[in-house]
Length: 288
Image (cartoon, rainbow, N blue to C red):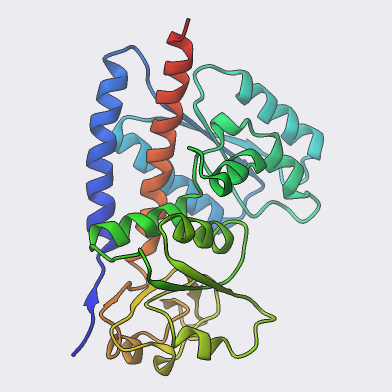
């Protein structure tokens, strides 16, 4: 029996409807959520991603602005721009589009974004708050995965979750969120011996590696939930995930497709984070 397909587009549409209501509530109090996107250079995929994010913002009433710097911009230029955005009360969220040109170290740039405006959830303060169990702006993709699991009523308490990948953007925060949801978590990375054996033990398997076809069908425990975060464009133009989809679908209970699974949720959670940042800033403004 084939697995049920998790429809990320449908859940993302539901999230956008929720954001519309939150934007309206903020507007009633004189606040328009604002998202600033910093784009350094003219990396074609980044241009597409930024354009899609701006379109998402327009649909829900969030004011977005793309601030462009040349590909040879010095680190001081980027940091100066972020400082101006940090100080601008009309900007509630700041996103630095990755990847940056090779001569720029992303760490000091990401760290320069004020944690209250860090809608990517990558600032060390937000990462620390996540690990400590405090309210924080969460990384968009892992947050989107958690929302999919809730929408499809996937039990996490006591489940064994295996996360393939340990990146700062997905793998590590994904593991921490699953721990916070009371799962038993195994994190696999490039030095893990026999990741297939560990994957076969997973009630919830989350792959965020970016290697097409890495996860074979026989890696899937019968009845498991499979979340494919990976995305790779093949030479023939097709976009695929980490999971060998058709064999995996024959063993899993639930599975995300690529595209149409986790990707739409990442963009939707950026809208949620921008709204949350605006709500928190308004609350701080109203505090005596």
